[in-house]
Image (cartoon, rainbow, N blue to C red; front, side, top):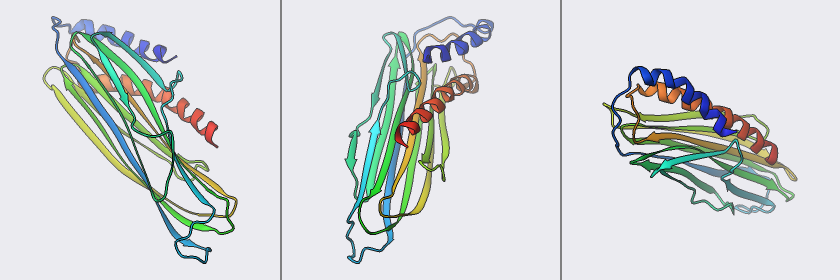
Length: 253
């Protein structure tokens, strides 16, 4: 399915590329894009009479890198290589802080790379005890898209929400290098805050999803402006991204 997303981009650019074609020459190209995030958990108040006690309160931080048709696509030719690096456990108990990161990199000298990777994070809170807890959860995130070489693009799509869809948002960062601009890097930081009461027997889920879509080639024939490359790539990426979020939310709620 993801392969089909890229075909219109390739066909749509074919005419433009033919109009301003240059002699092909091998040149190294690479991308290195990363998403980092943290959920900070604070207890504002509680009916628990013992200060600092968290009886019944369980917080689980989760991470997954799905490989279904909406969440993963990769195609490398020649000496093109790519690597998705996610140094996160699949699930871990959380006291007051949950950190996560998701990075994708690739390079080519005599070849090409097209990739789409998705990383999904979750913070699941449940209260099995007799006391209620007033909680404040702060999400801090940073997106950094970086490329190097004559013909490379990388875009990060980021989305966050809660299971009740009371607070949600999205962000974006992208970079492109081409003849005349051999390096590019862009960053986008952001944050969100949830405050709520977790009553006895209640559960709350907070989720975030990062999609990293990248393209590079060692023999691109034309120095098209960065906006043209990024427009096609990220619009197509959003199609799979929204469907991946829907599947993720359905499985969690």
